Amino acid sequence: MNALVLHGGASNKIELRERVEEFADIAFREGNALESVVKAVVLMEDDPLFNAGTGSNMRLDGSIQMDAAVMIPGNFGGVINIENVKNPVLVARDVMLKSPHLILAGDGAIKFARKMGYEYYDPSTDKAREKRDKIIEKLKNGEIPEYYHPKFFLEFLGDTVGAVARINGKFAAAVSTGGTSLTLRGRVGDSPIPGAGIYCGERGAVVATGIGEEIIKRMLSINVYNRMGEMPLEEICKEELEKFGDVPVGIIAVDENSECAQSNLTMPYAIKKE
Ligand code: GLY
Image (cartoon, rainbow, N blue to C red; front, side, top):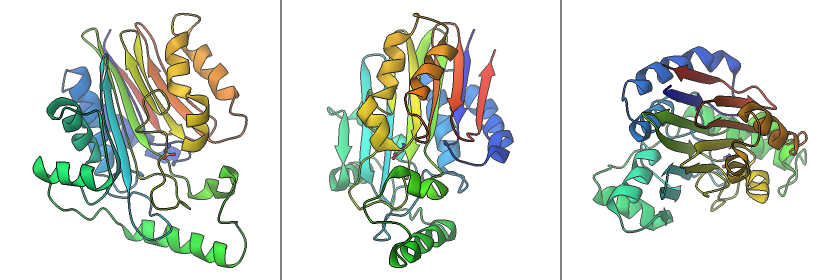
């Protein structure tokens, strides 16, 4: 059975679930695992209610740097700290399909995007500015330290979007994020790191969401992938998430015959099967 699973970010509003379901319907129509996950992520990048593309979090210095990645069995494409493009996930797909590299970062990623025809685009929103202003005020008032524990900024998270698919026997995964807020320029989260925020192989696909630093330390996505088949997917995801205690995290996954979406926070998600 074909399946597409989408999430709109651990800690994002559960009311967005209906919207995520609509996006799942649209993206599923692509009828191809890679194109479906990319389309799903594009739809969320274009919606300012999600922390990816338009609506991305701002770094402490006011800049917006985004990470995105796509993965299929045996291939990967990622962009790190890309700026001023509308859809980082499309650039990540082009890195995979049209460049000799797997990951491009910073200026190089931006230059590559322009070469591929992606025009200058400002993804900033008033909401992102207001969020940053609040953080700066809290920092000034000493309410949060500059070098913080993730729990301090849970209220500002609104994390990452992603999709995994199993369509016509093929797996794919895609992810995109404006990163966590209260973040230094240059910071890289889990999303563009294969094995951490995303993994896809012949047995399934996995995408994570939450505090990137903690997800990288635990290599969450490849841990779930490596355990596929050991027990029901739901239980594997549950066990892996439990290892995070109360650190904000979420996961979506598909294997050969099942799907799961779980988080220790609110996480709007959709599971479409046919
Ligand atoms: N999970 C996204 C990030 O930490 O950047």
